[in-house]
Image (tube, rainbow, N blue to C red; front, side):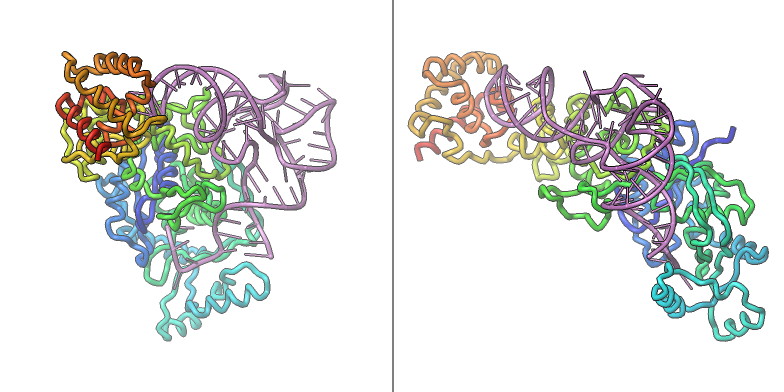
Length: 495
RNA sequence: GCCCCAUUCGUCUAGUGGCCUAGGACGCAGCCCUCUCAAGGCUGAAACACGGGUUCGAGUCCCGUAUGGGGCACCA
């Protein structure tokens, strides 16, 4: 049996899109499931849209997600080169072969002439496209156009009769009527191939066994089938993957939505690098993406990539597009943070967002703080707001009204905090348990609720109304610092 | 305009003719736990787009309608 070879073939026109990443992921899962190879190929045949560093970023983001390619522009391979711009001679050679075998022809129409054809067709309520007027040019006519200085394109002589039937691994049996097809351009006048030509030639010579791509390509599938047949090459299996729609289900999740917000005012992240920067874990993102359009079985939502690889099967891929269920990602990320990440690793991961927020991170403190934040954050970045105060150079004191708890006023709060001081000072061991016991007793003595005592201390000591648990926090802060902050809170209340 | 694809709770999904009184998950609501916030536990509301067939029997098969998505470039 042939080695399964799949590929991800992005155009270097920008940063890696979350939808493209999902397609790449499915393609990779398919290859790995069969113990095959996953290839990265760069489709840079549109010189106008080329974006600098796009390739480097694709590779970086795929690696971050754990999607490692076996062949590609950075690591090579025996089927290279992996940039289409470096394979021009191959496309030109085979385009010419098609012309010589009467399966393609030179067309000399100018962009203006093509635009005019389109307008006329639209007026006649015909689909836009080319009418094939240069299909049967005589040698003299061609010579005349050449003499005018026109550079031709090579167009495919599309078969117009009958139907083209294909079995798609995801979509099932699909049938197209050939009379709706056009003589598409294969080789542009600048000598670069179009997608159609390059895709067939590359997938043939790179020995791709399963062509995976988004279902936006489904309408051009008959073109490709006819091309394969014209070449007389063996046709690989095709799998048209569903695409991600906007969370409201309207329109595909598009790069144009970068920086825009959904109805509830939340930012819709569409670039993989944005997810990285927002503090999502790659394994959580992969788990999340794998659950859209495919399902693990066993009613399990959380699983490792290895488990997904074992079970992944294209027949289980849902052919329908899906609204992007972004709210599920926070839940999954939270699970990975609290159930699948060790304290040591989490501490390591937390350092970056903290530092990015301009804080000076003490590793020892961080390691103590990490278990306290683990169940309280859904994204790595949340640590800054919740526990950033541990790393402030100078303490940011709370506002007066924040210290005062429910059903209390400044006077009673002062009394309370002043009562805590001698007792905390007298504590022999500065531990959470000791503090908890003692302050609990104090609450009873003062006829206050635990929440009132603990809450006032929390705000005094952290400067925040929402924070890590009070006594755990005080234990980490240390006795001197904690008492200092309580005294400061009393001053604030008095002032 | 023409062509292709899809359609189960708000959303992601299970379901491949009888096991479906339609299952799970997110989100939402309520309760419990609780020093804040989380986490955790329990409970609840919530769907087969519509209309015709086929069949003893249809969420599951067929046809139509509606809705949604996509395509129709010297872009990929």
